[in-house]
Image (cartoon, rainbow, N blue to C red; front, top):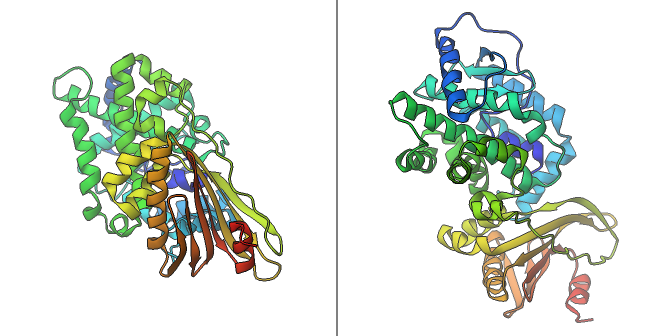
Length: 420
């Protein structure tokens, strides 16, 4: 749902594709561990080290300037505005939320290290909340080793406009590195084999309990928090499942045959069956005064799960979101003078029953995301009325749920309802 440049910044705080400083820090004893760590990682993954990894240090102040500059270079203001507006119209962030500032603040707080795969260089932050620099090095050197074989810059930054697919690729990159880091820790303890279930649980528990240590993360909206954590938690579990099935071939397979979306990360069986999300047709009504498209995109299972989680609770989200087959949205500006944004949205579900469940849940979400919501019709297939952002019409037809939100005038609303 978020444009690729920002979703990468949110989801990959340790793997930044931005250009980093060329200045190397003075000799640092921490980096003396690099060769030994890479040798162990290479042995576990069966990937040879093709050249030594360059390294250096960076301060948090340098990182903050670097992030702000890179976002400015990568995304136009209107693109950031479109992403921010999308999140606001779906009710996933507050109306005063500043997406650009939040991105920079989060990364400055979170980042302990990063591997820059443009310059092929590893950086550690001078001030780090990570207790073990060896562990941090193992994670980042896993990126470096994968980059030497699979060109991570091309893999992640492949000009793909499907945001959900980009999120899945990010989960592969971070999940594989986190898994390899755990396997490295196991080797250091004199053990062999893949990470244990206890080790894998530490990744999940660390994500669930980490927000208290990081005030910026803790104060962030749920969608932003989970966008940050998803590649590490679900990505690690995904790679573990692929490794259990394919062994060492997993290291090559996930990069040469990447997952198509977040549903395959949540459910590895869908990855092996080559499931691809559907693209249901978004409503495209005519409005008085004409319309102009601002942005459009897809919602994957991750996005659907966050919508349900925020407004109906986590357990309901985990129960219902796996039944989503695909979703699309479009935002248009309507009107001759005072243009207003209208959200057009369509989702497809695996049965009429699950579509009915989602229709009911999404109707509840609409009531909760607006301060004022006056419903004029609420049946098993239609929910319509008005809110502070305009009129809305949400429908269910078979396995499909569609919604038009922010209709600027009553005449258009009544016409779209078939009442004129």
